[in-house]
Length: 469
Image (cartoon, rainbow, N blue to C red; front, side, top):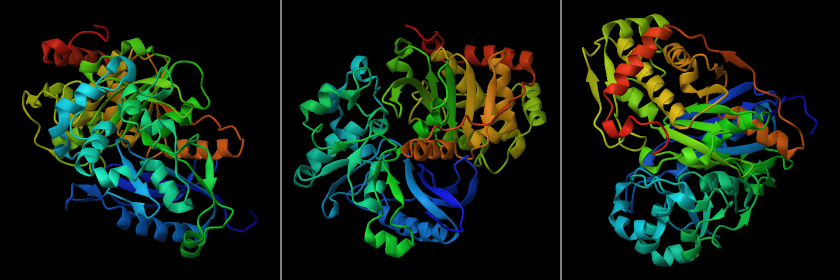
């Protein structure tokens, strides 16, 4: 490509709560970002994502970026537990919101067929968080539509909308779907029994260029016909790839957003425990990664009463909360995590100012993240990505709880952009550069470790054990 405009990778990042389209250069610097909320349509036949509105927004956004940048590639990055059922005319059914609880009416039949944690490393989750449960329910409710459909994971759905090529790659199948066996790198017995393994089309790598934009997209956006649409990746795996592509020694990535996802490279799969909601993700190279997570962004909001971006508490605010003795005891959401069956509460005097509530929420998320790291027997550097990486109360608290294990934070605002750029570089045969990281300074180490002991003493007795049964 030859142009006076700077070259950029367009990253289409579809999170559960928010959507962003960013122009990023090869060093990971964000040059432009457009954003909107991710909306769910509650109309029949079940709650679903409004993909047509999102597609129109994407096309307008790509047109905006194409005016200012020479877009060399587009990389879709999306949340997990989501797939499209499509034929040559498009979706045969709406793309389900994984929080739809109506799928649970088939649980007894589904669990008898699908539940196999020893092989899938996929725990039983509520609503549609196991993708296999969504598909099982859809096949029973809509057999005719399901029977003619190709199953396309969500990142590859967006790639197909732009280039017309259907494919799949393993990161979206390896995130608590019940459809994948991480140790063997292949479809699960359940997926084969349902004969879904032949319904996914062509397997590719996340960095595979599937093709150029289709003519209609070129005409609507001004993208070059030389632009490459990559297969794309599951969002937490994008955050992980940004570091895994340049590291071999044990390390851990903590991706923070609606979910806080803890992925520990170098930990054995034997640490995983189904009752604590741990699982194996599958990275872009097809390797299993011991993982723990909880819906920390939602819990932060429940405790604080405001989004993480509204008030970012300081280290001084954290010290005020430590001195008050207030504690948040899990759990404040029931979608996932080791304590999802418990009802959350505030122990001690609940703070009454926004900054103090935000500090309490940040400390809670740090205590939960520390708990997840311990469950996974995480070693080496801990790298914070996403929204909470800029929250000083959270970073200071976690650094104190993990001391002397080093905790770093990334400057990537979403935790996914550098991973998406890594895919673009790999697609061109280039090696990604190591990410620039800032060391997080621990605060009141002794106070926080004493607080952790008190907090753990208030946890359910069955959850106080170490990571092994």
